[in-house]
Figure 1: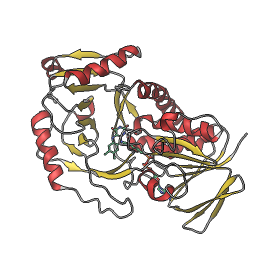
Figure 2 (figure 1 turned 90 degrees about the vertical axis):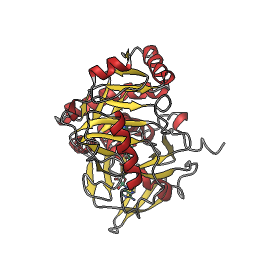
Figure 3 (figure 1 turned 90 degrees about the horizontal axis):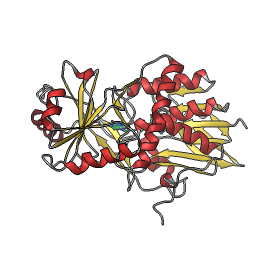
Figure 4 (figure 1 turned 135 degrees about the vertical axis):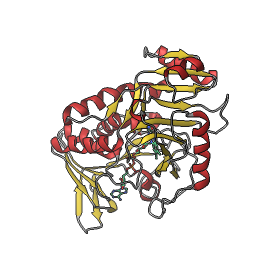
Length: 365
Ligand SMILES: Cc1cc2nc3c(=O)[nH]c(=O)nc-3n(C[C@H](O)[C@H](O)[C@H](O)COP(=O)(O)OP(=O)(O)OC[C@H]3O[C@@H](n4cnc5c(N)ncnc54)[C@H](O)[C@@H]3O)c2cc1C
């Protein structure tokens, strides 16, 4: 049965939910507090890694579902969002072999290389002790993907509104009443809350079982490289020659080769952060690039900032509490799954069961 659904948040998750809900015939309104393409949340910029390879088969199967949905989005909107340039994982043997084993079990392709063979093929990257190439990976253009998801939702009848902040959410009858900063009131059968780093403050008081989440400001750098768009994405795993906890990720983009440490930034309040670049962290990453990325100009990086919203187990929250569906806690690795997370959200709104792995309340015993 078609439902009246309000989606709060126009990042990748809310936009995807709006697309899938509208495709089911629901009457959908998406409300986003900032302008289109804003850079104050988690979904902006020219690049995010797409990859099927995870050491955990659960995420492999989720990425396998996400891939054709990104391609369907490209067909529906006539825009390009995904470039399959492949990915090189390198570092200690146990990290690359664990990925290779999971990919093999799932019937997905990969290739193991010596560091010398990897350096010959990708001279811009100095591989550590072992390397694994997997072709079902590459780059999502984040800005293009969010714009395409919203366009696809509109094509299916959704209304997308920017510059509208939801200020309260109250249970009414079996549904929800929302009030905005423009004193508008919406009555909805169901609400999808995809508010990124704003989730702990906004949803904590109204959604039972929301896990504790750390909101941090991360600061990747873009390094100039003439052939940046041809680069595979890469992950340099901790251990062997790298002691940085969480390793280093990177990929080519129109802005150069992006590289970043994973989830090491300071805790921030998304409404009151000044987006100042930390010079010491910038220096550490530039030193990394000088040593491990011979294909970039390590002396002239440009910084950008972005929010991570991290759960204690780094698993997402994709669950429903009555009429409120929550998409939160994407822990710095959610974008690649965005196309399928909207589909999961639409299923929850329509009473389909969710995954226990993503359940609310899983941290409260
Ligand atoms: C530096 C960095 C690198 C990353 N790299 C990768 C990667 O390579 N691969 C990968 O898969 N993932 C990556 N991620 C993670 C991925 O980008 C995020 O998981 C994803 O973008 C989260 O999207 P979201 O929609 O949940 O949040 P957001 O994009 O923050 O969207 C939430 C939206 O809700 C809006 N909002 C909040 N409150 C309200 C309100 N009350 N009313 C109206 N609107 C509201 C906000 O303005 C915001 O636009 C990276 C993240 C960062 C920060």
